[in-house]
Length: 179
Image 1: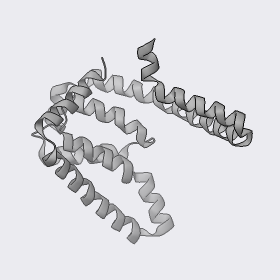
Image 2 (image 1 turned 60 degrees about the vertical axis):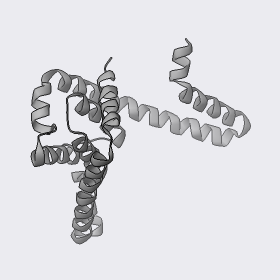
Image 3 (image 1 turned 90 degrees about the vertical axis):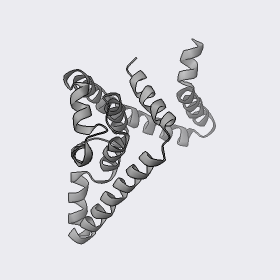
Image 4 (image 1 turned 60 degrees about the horizontal axis):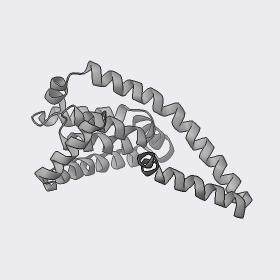
């Protein structure tokens, strides 16, 4: 029971704050509960299909294949695959993190996982099309080009600065996610 409370302590604190707000400032409390409900329903619609896809990826894609395509020796191909996976993905950013955990578990290079997350957050195809229509092609292409270089730069620098023990710890944690 103590472990369960410790695991969900932040959620429990937020529930307590919501209830407190409901008692002290009912208008703000009802608004907070309404938004909490909307966000929870959105997550309940998005998360189950993602975990089904993760489960299928975990079973269907062998570790050796993932290591060949996105592992330490994948080179430029691994970066391209990571970038395309992130750019072609659908869903909010919080969906990318379980997928990133699975990529690490399957042996993907750490910088490729960072490229995947960076692409997911900034270079999605629908976002680019919206920007092109609303702000013009010049803006969209400029932002896309800058983001592309910045994503690669951040991934490369992070990979270089990360010490071996830290990287090993990250991979260990990724392996323990499914346990």
